Amino acid sequence: MLANFTEDKDLGQIRVIASDMDCTLLADDGSMPPHMDALIRKLDAAGITFCAASGRPNYTLAEMFPEIQNQMALMSDNGAAIYCRGKLIYESLIPVEQYQDMIRYTLADGRGCPTVCGIEACYIRSCDERYDNYFRTFYKKNRLHGRPHRT
Image (cartoon, rainbow, N blue to C red):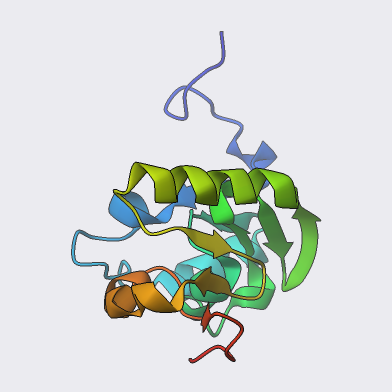
């Protein structure tokens, strides 16, 4: 049985601390805890990497830590991309056939707007542009039918 952190006196073995963002690290209003940058810098100085984990794409997650990305890790897209100190160290992409099947399913179901979240941008049908404000909560770089992304 693994000891929990209150019983484990050898915390010097910790090398990574990961936290989900929404409703975990972030408050209900989406705000970051006070002095988070300073805390991440202290962890980094102690040899511990802080990893922000989220379903958000990396470009959106990175905007939340503009000053300290080179002192932490970002696990984005529900684990499909991991950046450590500003460098991509892992990515897992969905095959084209699979995401096309998911788009067809969503359209046939009729209760959603299909989006395809890529490493560089989120692709949204131009007919769903009316939901742009909501999409931008999570996807800061959106492309509509091949148009350049708007930031």
